[in-house]
Structure formats: structure tokens, C-alpha cells
Length: 462
Ligand code: F0G
Image (tube, rainbow, N blue to C red; front, side):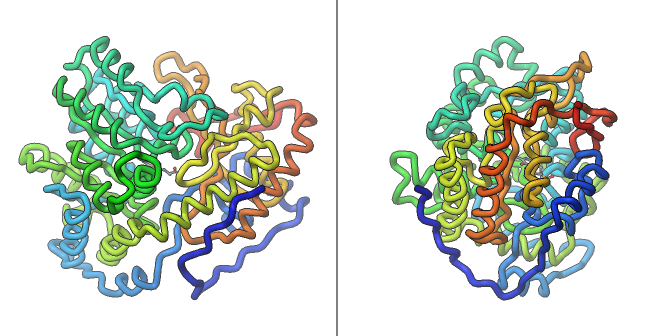
């Protein structure tokens, strides 16, 4: 039996019409875009689960704050409001706005990484991996082994394997490791959280070997909610207290504010302790790539909505509804025997496409196959998190074999209702009924050299 849906802690003031095309129309559209869902026009999608990034609904308070935007090139009052809010929440000495998460990576990573250096993470997200590689570095993932078994229900499956981290540092030589990145929640492993205990242990290792510890902080509030709910000793702490403690273990953070901060565009870099040399380098890179450091590629009005969103994202009633909505969808899949990275993650359900299509090998991209089927079935757009996204080895050019083959149902915040969740579950149930008849996956007919999944062309294998 599906669990009870946590009712929305808001009501709806403005609506955006959406429309479902006929099956024939959808069939035509998906063929026309070379079976790459990124090429679909938004109007041709009924439920858009491509991402939870920048697709969230702002509140009436955020829309009002937008009107207060100070568009001064330098020293806008909106900048100071944002910096005050971020310092209040994270207790970091320096806050740098940037236009989104990958801009934070582009500004910070080349400062810390040079050619041949290693970057180690619980798991890198695709753009984060790309920016390490663009800076000349090489990425190593050290996630706990249970993360790689989707059917295994365990808390904090996003954790770093601490023993493996230390072993890897010693193998590569601590002087060759430029940065350790803790991704919260662990997006690539299914939005799985990282425990406070794990963060504390990772921080101790980084301190021991004098390696900078960075938080990839896109979904920091969801992570804090899981800690409050599931980690002993945190039940009576506020989300803000948990966030502060967690961030206190790191040296820097890079954040896409398009997720838990509930804005459509924005990002941040944080430096915990006043470090004039590092801050000077961040400001210099920001001025070159993003714009003057008091706006960092954002409008004054964006800085305002971000300042409000930082607090709204921490609201516990909101987080309870948010995580509850994702868990409701997951429980409907449980009823139907559809496997996913379990327990459900913070920002969505990562359906195990390798289990749905055991007959399709990784190099025929089961996650992409399921994504195309979901569009065919109900106009639902998802993204693939698997071998198709992982791409080719940068040294050998060979297709890499990912640990997972997921179709990610990323749920935008405050956008879809319980009935939409039911449409999604029903579509997956229909696909499961005919899954065995889908014999082959897809092949790539054209691909760009980096971040190929955004632009590649695919073709069904006959
Ligand atoms: N880090 C993580 C963990 C992310 O999930 C993302 C983006 C980024 C960094 C980059 O941030 O998009 O603002 O430049 N993830 C989105 C997603 C795109 O769909 O999961 P960005």
C-alpha cells in the first residue's frame, strides 16, 4: 500500500497550463530529436522531470523580493542582503555569488587543481567532473559500496567510503590530491544523503593530510533533513543548526542555488576562514568569467530571491512535504515491484533501468531506453544517470561502464501535485508490463567530446 501523501504546505496563486500530446505526436517528436530528451521543446513535455534544477516554483515572498533588486554594477544593496543571509546560515567568512553551480566550479577548481592532480569525491556530478578534467585534474569516486546496490535499503548511502578515501590518498600521494569534494546529497548515487558522522571522519582525514575539503552543496537542506530524521542525536536540532555544523567541517563550498535554494538561477562559493590569497584568486576569476564580484553573473533581483530562498529552503514543514512527495512516488513503485535506488533520495526517484531491462547491456543505455519509453507512454521527460551520461574514458576514449543505469525522475520543488505523481507511477507500471518485448537499446550516431549526453544523437538498435 502506498504511503500517505504529505499535503502541500502552500496554496496555488498562479498556474501554468500544460498539455499532453497524442501518442502519435510524441512518437514523431522523439524521433525528430534523435531520441535525446534534451532537444525536446518544453511545450511538448507533459511532466518535466529532466531536473529539479532551476525548475522550482518561487514563493510570493520571493516574487516580492524580486522587485527590491538593486541593479548597481558594484556594491548593490541586494549583494549585501544575500551575503548577510548566507553568512547567517553557513557561518562562512567569504561568500561569492556566481550564476550557477558549474560557474562556482569553473571559478574555484582551477585555483586548486593543476595538471595531473587528483580530486576525490563520494561521487562527482557530471559538470563537477567536467570542471576537474578541464582544470587538468582526474576524478576518483569513493562512495560506500552499498550505494552500488540499488535494492539494498540503507541509510546514508551517499557516504564516502572513509577507508577507501585514505587508501586512495596514500596511493596517489597526499601532495598529488588537490581537493576532496563531498557532494550533498549524493546526486549521482540517487540523491542519497551523507551523515554528519561521515562528514566528520572525512574532515579528519583531510586535516591529517592537509587537503582542502569542499562541499558540493546543491542539496544541503535535504541532506540536513535526512540527518535530523535518521541520524541519532539530531532529532532536537534545527535544520539550520545541522547545516552549520556540517559546513563547519569543510573549508569551502560550491553551490548550485537552483536546487534547495528554490530559485531559477544562481550559485554561491563559500570560504569558511578568511584566506586573503584564495579570496583574491576567486575574485579575479569571478571578474573574468562571471562579472564583478558583487553580482557574479546575476541580476540584483536574482540576488534578492536567492537571499529569501536560502531561508525558505530550510523550512521544516516544506522539507517534510518535499521528501514525503518523493517517498509517496517511491512507495507506489514498491507496490508494483519496480526497482529503484532505495530508499528514495531527496530530489527524486532513480529507477533501476538495468533491472527493468536486464536484456539491454550498458553500452546500449538502459536508462536512456526507459527515458524514451516514459516520453512515449505519458509525455514524461527524465534524464539518464548511467553509462550514457558517464561517457568515454578521457585517456582511452572507450565507453565507460557506470555503476548504475538509472532513469532519474527528478521532482521540481512546489511544482507538481499528488495526481502528477500518480501519472508517473502509472506510466512506469505500463512500461513494466511490456518491458520484456523491448529487446534492444540505443546506439550513439554522433557525440561531442565532453558532456556528450546533452547533445548526442541516438538511434534505436534494430
Ligand atoms: N553539483 C551537483 C551535485 C549538481 O547536481 C549540479 C547540477 C551541479 C553541481 C551543477 O550546478 O546546474 O547550477 O551548474 N545538477 C543538475 C541536475 C543540473 O539536473 O542534477 P548547475
